[in-house]
Length: 427
Image 1 (cartoon, one colour):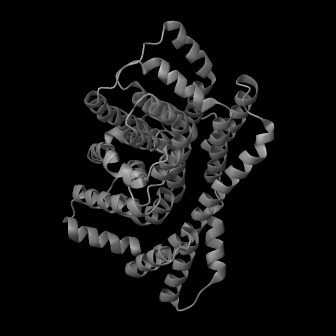
Image 2 (cartoon, helix red, strand yellow):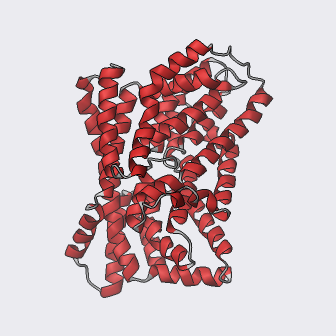
Image 3 (cartoon, rainbow, N blue to C red):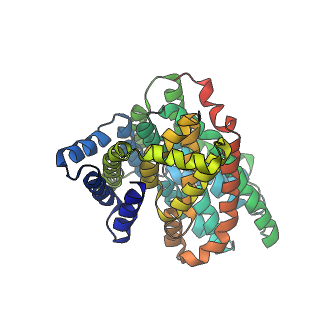
């Protein structure tokens, strides 16, 4: 059954069938193998049940908030503030890219939104100031992967829904890994900047720093509003998404005065398309998950891992990480999470692992796939901005991938890095 599932799914994908429809067709194949018949009502009910979820409503709101923030000048002000703080050090614009991505991650929840917002502003400046184009592009791509890790995070919401795990705790579990990745990327950039001998720019005056801080103030407090309200129990993650949209509109229109109402139809259309893709995947994955459970695929995987690992949880996590890294190279984050989450989570909980810890490890792992060929969604985004080919980025991106793998190993074998903050909150 496991072989039929994998062969069917990847066979349909190789035929260039969209992943959501490939999942539904794979569900049909499994149903035929299990019962010899296809029940359209069961498939339809599973798809509807997959999207009939209050927490999932947060996804379109955060996607819309990210689109509005890009149009309203919020991302540009975050970059300008980061540049005023650390733009004067050697290779300063590289650090600006990482810090800005970490700050913007606190409001977008999406790697593509983060990368396109920061990259479109920063990469032309880095190119103009003589930074090595391929390495600076690789850095911005790697920094963009922090978007789905630092809360709020769309993949964390999805895992929380499919795994029945607290979305709030998933959000909090991503804080330390996101910060560790940011520090790791800046460490790699430090050695690159020293080797290239980049010149440092003049230090911003205190007045310039204060001015940039004032300009970015309304953008910088949004993560505090989102997380503070969620942690304190004032509102749920879904309600936080609504608040983020309203806040982004008010700030973009009245504080920064850059959001044009005539652009709203385009913003709403773009957000609707992105949301529809994610939610259709959620529904299709739920139909596949129903058959996966019926076919007892998780228990089959558990038995296989037990045989290979000699019942050692450390080896099990090593094997799961290898599997996820390989899958991440050929499949985007969201479908990989939706397909593998229902299969792997029962294995993790069967070994007594914290589902929040496992979910964060899974999201961080699959985020690495966003910058690894051949699928690497974020790589295509930065290549479009920098006008270079994927092939030009393979070598420069490897050191950044390596440091992310190191962070993955740290959070895998030091679970406290993930669970420390969530355990402080009883929600």
